[in-house]
Length: 145
Image (tube, rainbow, N blue to C red; front, side, top):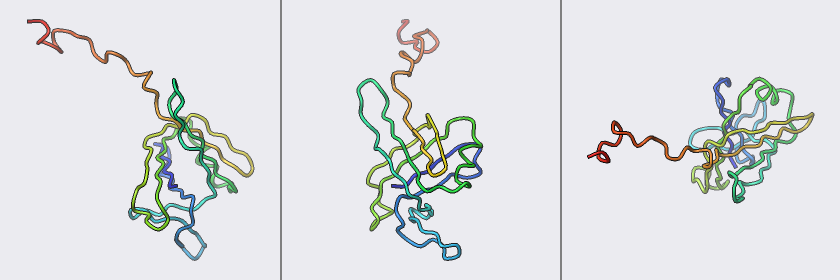
């Protein structure tokens, strides 16, 4: 699983991988996954895949284990919700996308001495206005002939 975390206050997106597929650097020793020219850094990560509960938007929880103090700084520095993309790839074929969830919004972030948890969800379709526009003469002239 590849995770991209974005936020306007972050200088660049955070790219994380759940698998140490290749050695990225030797000094310091860093493993990760190369996907479409980008290096995703390996962290111990788990996720409960987006659910399909009736009446609510799909949500998932990303949990990053064995974190260092430097990993919590970006989470503490932002005040509004980040967005996350989840991509499923196989270790043997990291450029072939098996599944993808885009533009999930962060709803809750928690951390302690050894773990960061981030709840992400897509926006509910129930919050979309219906109808989206008024049936006025200016917007729908064919209705007023």
